[in-house]
Image (cartoon, rainbow, N blue to C red; front, side, top):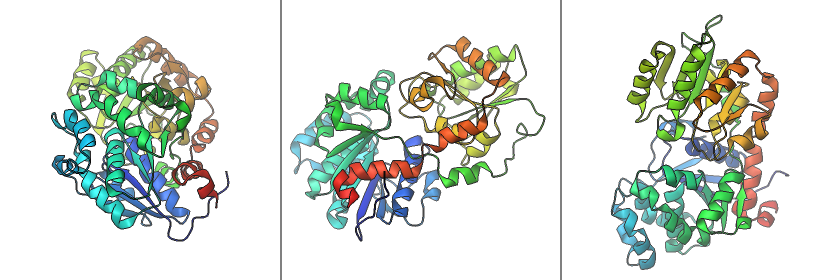
Length: 406
């Protein structure tokens, strides 16, 4: 694709709930920066301006804080969009997501700024964007972005507000001008669940391999395990929650430790920390496991680790897997729905193992440590997921292909 030349003062909005730690949040910041470099006026519209990635927002991107501190403001929707409000009631009755409370403020923003296009991310954020755009009565072209494998997300969910998503998606998603999914697997699944024609959904890979990633990968790392001559270090990065299936990784690591020296570092915070620490102690590997919490710069770890492992039960397009490749780190991943198979091209750039199979994961880890792939080839694969490539594709969708090319 050729680089687009924006019309003067073309304003684009990217809407997401916050900039808390997460793959969708990081990739949204990356995309905002790439669009701003093209000369667009970019607003990063946040349900609430909070989270560690706020510090990474480029100076050329304007942050708009909708200050949604609860779901209560959504009540203002009832008189104007009664049908939409009634559809939201089942979700509002049980731990309603704060993102829905941003609807009135988002509608006011759209009426005031009238951006040419808006891209929203994450399920409830997408629902909020549809209602807000219709409430505002503006001509802003709306694109929704689906980030996770919906069937797996619904099957694993314990929160009522998540299990009630499917009817909302079927009602609201078709009203958008365009729909994007972060992988072909997510697109196929969304089409089936939401009963949307597959041809309406375009798969666009996230912007991952940024200049900032490479700069941070070269930064010094203060950790005693990442020194010359130390035991091999296996790394994983992600929230400590059931989706990531860290128990399988720890069990695989314990099997590996019976055969060779190694250490395991898991970067991230979450509700499963105590259970994971207890499992490591039970399996006798607690001294070789470190869980230091969220790391603002995981790339310095990736650049120095001997192996990166993704053990997830499901994903959308796991950015951490791409980040590890871009840092030249050998990888092993579960063949979960969806994303790893597409990223690794069916196993060309790293082995894929069945979900939840600790023995198979251990074998893949052992084989990769014993015979690591060429790191430069991994870097080249990671570099393919560039902000420039993502920006071209998103502009085609957000503005319409013909508009984006003028």
